[in-house]
Length: 572
Ligand code: ADP
Ligand code: MG
Image 1 (cartoon, rainbow, N blue to C red):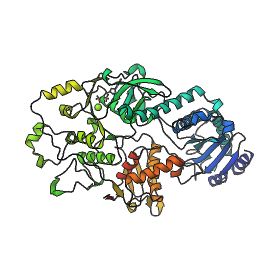
Image 2 (spheres, protein in one colour):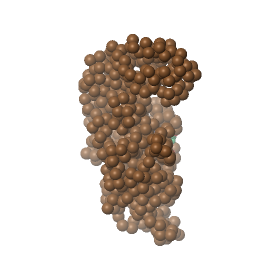
Image 3 (tube, rainbow, N blue to C red):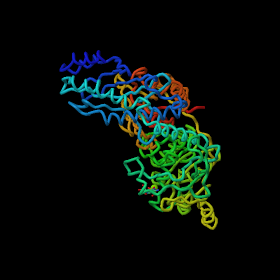
Image 4 (spheres, rainbow, N blue to C red):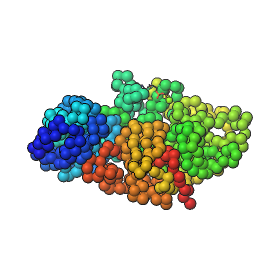
C-alpha cells in the first residue's frame, strides 16, 4: 500500500498517461489489489481492477460453495454486496468524464454465473472497474488516493468478508438458487416441463422493469387443482404449485387476463431468480426456447420444409436462405434452429407470432387451395413435433379455438387465475361440424445439423478485432451488426459480451472448423467453461477478464444464426 501511495504522489498533476505506472499488484495486508489495465483517458472505458482476499481472512465456510449452484449463488451474492458497498462508500464522480466512479457487474433478477467474482477454497476475488480521476487530462492524485486507499479497502472489507455480511441472507440466496437447479433437474421425472409454485408473483412492475409488481397490486399465483403437484426441494422441503405436463399446452383467456405474463414466467424459468423476485420457484426445463416472428432476419440454409414448401418460382425450402425473411419464414426458421439445438419445449405467444404461421381456418382452406398456399401452419405440425422429437409446446392463444383439437392441456386465464378447461374445450370441438382439414403432408423428421464455415465468421475489421456488444439487442461483429432484439431469452448485457467471445473462442480453438455442426462446436466450448470457468473465453485470463455472464447455447447459436455473413453446409 505504501508503494501505491508513493506512485500516486509521484504522478500527481502529471498527464493522464502517467497513470499507466499504477499497473501492478499491491498488498494491503488483509487483501491484495491488482491494477490490471489502466484506461487511456478519463472518458475511456474505466480501468480494470481486482481485489483478492485469502480465505483465512475472508472466512467463507466451504459448505457455502460446495457445488456449482451454491458457488454461483455465493459469487453472485458477493458481487451484489460489493455493488451495495460501492453505493455506500464511493463518492462517485469527481473530475472529468468517468473520473471517480467505481463499478461492478452485478446481477439483476437472475442469478447467473458471471466473471465479476470467483471463490474457491483459497481465496475470494472480485473484479471491478474504477475511473481514475483527472481534471481534463491532469491527474488528480488526492482523489485517486482517496479512491484506491480509502474507498476500495472499505468496500472490500464490508462485502468480501463472511463476518461483515448477513449469514442468514447469504444462506437464503444460496438455498433458493440450489432449489431451483434441483427442481429443474427433477421436472422430467415428475412428467412436467414447467413448475410454478403457488403464491408466486408473476407480473412485473412495468414494461421496462423486471422487478415484481408490488404484492398489494398483484394476484398471487394459484394452480388449478387438477394440475397441482408437490415436489420435494432440498432446502424449501415440500413445495406445491402448477406442473405443466409435456405435449401441447394452450393458454387461453380474454385479453389482459394474464396469459402473456404466465408465458413470460415460463420463459424466464430457464434461469434461477433471486429470493425476492416472485418467480424464484418458477422453474422450466433448461432447453425451453421462446419462438417468435422476426421479419427481416437473415436465414442461412435452414430446412423449413416442414412448414413451408411450394414457394413461388420453385424456391428451395430444404436449404432455405434469405437476407430478408417474412414473418412466417422467420418463425419457421426460429423453430427449426431451436430444434437443431435440441430444444425440448417451444414457447409461442400470439402477440409475437405471424398469424398465417399459426393458423389457416376452414374458410380460408376452402378459398385458397393447399397447392396455392406454401405454409403448413404450426397447428398441423405441433403434435408431430411432440410425437417424433419429444419436444413440447406451450402456446398463448386467445384468438383461435382451432388449436383445441391438437391440445393436450388447455389452461384458461381468468382475472389472472388459471383454470384447467381441457375437457370443455374437447367437448366444444366434438360438437363442431365444419372442422378444418389437417394439412400435415408427412410427419416431422429429425432436424439436419448445419456446419458453420469458419471463413464466413470474421470478427476483424482491417486486421483488428472489432467486437462490441451494445446493450441486450446488438453486437457489432467485424463489419456487421448482429441483431438480437428478437432473442427474448437474453436477459443480461454481460451474456451478450459472453456470446460474442464464445463465438471467437470457438473459432480460435478450431471447434468451428468446417466439420463440426453448430451444436457440436458450442458443446465443446461449454464443456471447457464447465471445466475451467467462464474466464477462459477472455483474452485476459489470469487478470480481470471483463464482464461476462453465462448464456445458454440456444442464445449463442441464435447470434451465430443472425450473423449475416454466415455460411453453412448441411451435415450428411
Ligand atoms: P394477456 O396476455 O392475457 O393480454 P398480460 O399477461 O399481458 O395479459 O397481462 C395484462 C396486464 O395485467 C399486464 O399489465 C400485467 O402486468 C398484469 N397482470 C398479469 N398478471 C397479473 C397478476 N397476477 N396480478 C396483477 N396483475 C397482473
Ligand atoms: Mg398477451
